[in-house]
Amino acid sequence: MTRPGLLTLALCCAALAAGTGHATAAASGDPSARVLALVNQDRRQVGCGPLTADRRLDALAQRHSDDMAARGFFAHTDPDGRSPWDRARAASIGYLGGENIARGQPTPEAVVSAWMDSPGHRANLLDCRFTTLGTGLHQGAGGPWWTQDFGYPQNAR
Image (cartoon, rainbow, N blue to C red; front, side, top):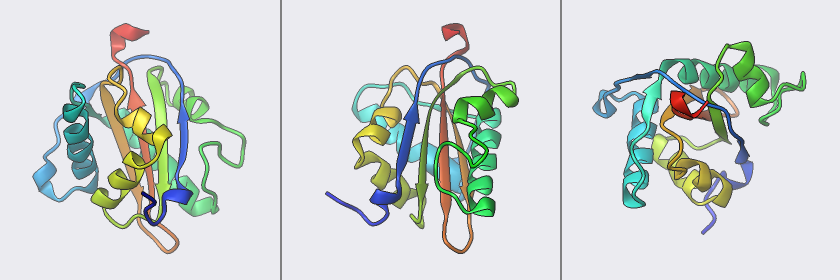
């Protein structure tokens, strides 16, 4: 089934290792916490363990969403040629495992639904090897811009 904005989705995934989680309250109204809760519902249905929020991945994802909005691009590789893993290394993050981006979905429910309808994005969301998640959201004209950065456990390095 095609959903609005599905064609504006992009995917990138690979392998590295580790993260530091922190608790978030899905009921807080925080869109990132809502995305995490929705993703974990879908993961539970296929037998994957829950992802935990990771502050460092949150910051990485937020910077990418903000950058896409500020510089008017929509891609995993930025206009300077930096990939998600280049940006992660620059932030001293050695455990990035994959990235999902989306543009135009107005709510956490809409963006998670669109990602689940896309085979590549769904693969990231339901990859049981990932243990942490960072979410970035930039609201603004032409958006919103969403980024998810997935992390491996520290012992996977």
